[in-house]
Image (tube, rainbow, N blue to C red):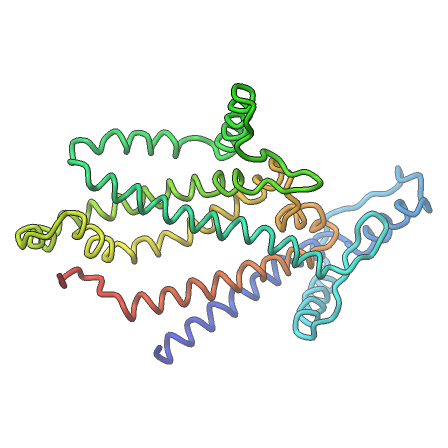
Length: 316
């Protein structure tokens, strides 16, 4: 890896980290967060009952804003204990935040892996069809892609309930309870739409690659269609898949909050949603906990692909 690439990666990491710090502390810029938190504590402790005289306006508190950014950086670098306020109590952020983070990441990682497998398999199966028979899978793809995300989740839940009513057999838990979490159905639902997008991008890439001369040359050499698709066309489509995979990854994360709410999963996104308003440092820490692993993954993938893969498709 060259020096220029290393500097580029370091600059991207630094710039994004600064952006996260600036975004995470925004409430301190526009509102008097310390006063609001003190008032809330008084209300929770029954020290203040009449709040009709209270009001707040949007102002620019640059001093409080940069003070909170400095405090957040200091906490991250020194490893000091972070506490957050909830229902009249100051609680340590960790290890609870790490537990819900690992729970959500388990759902996310398994769903993305499953989406990759489904997307690749659907693409290969579609490409094995004659060109004139590919219109039906494409039409189904268009319909599913057009459905709202929440509609897909609700249809999946209603489908499980309908099967249970007809057969008295519960395929999967449709919601989390006190003793067990819904696991299989949330993973399947979370993987469905990313799989559709992967299928869409790969299918377009495969059909473009199919027009190149090296495919005709491979057929002329007597290579089977399956081997051409797997060993050559797929290899040349990996970079296209990787370039679109960032969008798929962000799409899955965006759907994670809705999934956790509907399936009543006590996860990472709901924790931020419920506690991040009064405790902006939770949002900052959460963004870093998502950004750093994904940045390492995508950077490693980019360097690996550029170094080891021949994107030209000339080798048979």
